[in-house]
Image 1 (tube, rainbow, N blue to C red):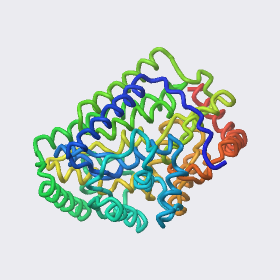
Image 2 (tube, rainbow, N blue to C red):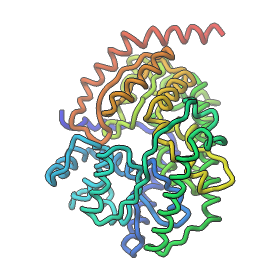
Image 3 (cartoon, rainbow, N blue to C red):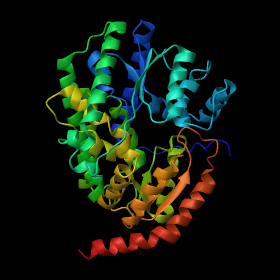
Image 4 (tube, helix red, strand yellow):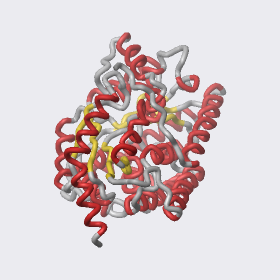
Length: 432
């Protein structure tokens, strides 16, 4: 099977529907602004988007657009278009779909991307750097990179201190470098666009981001402590991620509050997508955008519910920053962001912590090409008493995805390794 079967995911939360509707309206307005001459940026998920917010420069998040292309079952076609131009189709597929979509002149989702003037991204690896350079070559977009630095911190339990003591945790040298890079990007954008970096607006943006993530933390913790889970990741991902791409706005802050209030209401009413919840699963890795219905397949047969994804969890733990210098504080948010979700020991210890906190019985790791990082993550989760099934793939590439085979693998994992763990957890909790 070259493309996923395209099963539709059920979404029960009003916040998810509202976020999707808002995104459509926002994107239509962005394209109108682009036609009127406003420059538009493409930014990677781990790039400091807050400076663009403060400057009033609209942007599209690379991974959001890739997820949309994948959900529309376009990944195979777009990777073929990329290959026809001499680019590799087996590296950084998730990150290359946005560029590949610009070669679709007839049927790109939502009418296609507007012209991109700037690309902002952190450069993790040579392939990623070259991929963003291709935006300059193919579309004339200026690439504004941020350096990938390496952690020298000895404390892998970053979530305990990162909000206030990020300078000591991350290291002043890394913070200095990103702060200088941010200042350089701001100067460049002011010069070529005429947009001014509004420092007062920037302070507001940073405060709104902290408020938004505080609501996400409340939501994460509520799901972690409630059985049966009030929502699944199929519900939480759109409700969390669309507002994340609008960080620093009152709409995004209010959307996070709306999600929390919806989840709280469901808890108080004892509402759940799977009342006979027997097993709590976590999905480690990026979203399965081309087959979101996959997550709900195991509920009826096993009472197995995917209650955890990194999107809500990293929103809860990874974004809040406090500090007197807003620009330096923004560096404290992003200078080590890849370490938190990708690089051992920070990432591996965090996933293990989240598995315990969310009372997880089994983890399905949708793993990319970083074999060393994957091994450390799996080992840490299993050391916490949670079995792991690794399945290889890429969120931007449905060509090798066989849903029937994957259902079979996860079913066997549940039956042979997870069911007994879940039974022991339920017995412990019942004995409290």
